[in-house]
Image (cartoon, rainbow, N blue to C red):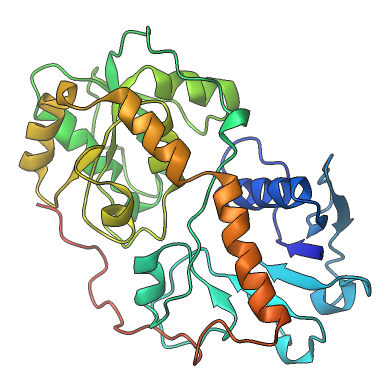
Length: 329
């Protein structure tokens, strides 16, 4: 099959870029399975297992689809979609909170993500764990970590800091933010027990996660998936977060605890040694790998090529969320 993967970002990703990381590993697995992969992505992108076509921003994206392509996999909803002549699929990576209708060939990234739009069409994200440094089980774990774009208030870095401050002596490393962010006001803490590392990636990020006791992830929105969760589990870090979005699907009682109450997370991290690091690692490697993701997408590609729609009707949000932030107390 000749597959075109379309996204507006740059590949390969170096630091932050969850969608770019996912589509890179999807294409890599599809190529291993014998399919011809082409990316239509931001100029400057390179790929050693497939072809790259730089997006021409002056042209309609649909006009840039090569004639020989069998199926187009969009990672955003393009304009003028009614004009497309090729079979296509659209992965919805984020949340919307309005009454827009998505295309019938939309795929979401978790069961909860899909159900919130009246759909049952989803594929879990997966990563190629061979690209990650192997966990070093001999490393002394000396802190907890937060991993995410801390400037997004829904990610609730303040909540993670508050959890740490309620413990006797635990420390927190924030991966993905700075101590000062004037869009959010001063970061509310000058605690010597909280360190900020900015947008880290690659070996530096792997090393920092590998030295952590666990991930603090008290998000205040419905997380569509959460690559931070599975990356942390890979390095043997149990997850302590809120029960929103995909988290209850990914974080079972063997690999973490979920609650919207600060005190519950404080108690949980105080008992972090009750969790098996090797079980966390084994679980995520088996459940959230890129081959499993690619095979799931291939099944949906085949349905589309057979002229089947992935959804009986156009997905649309079931309930518009009135509150800006989900409960955290």
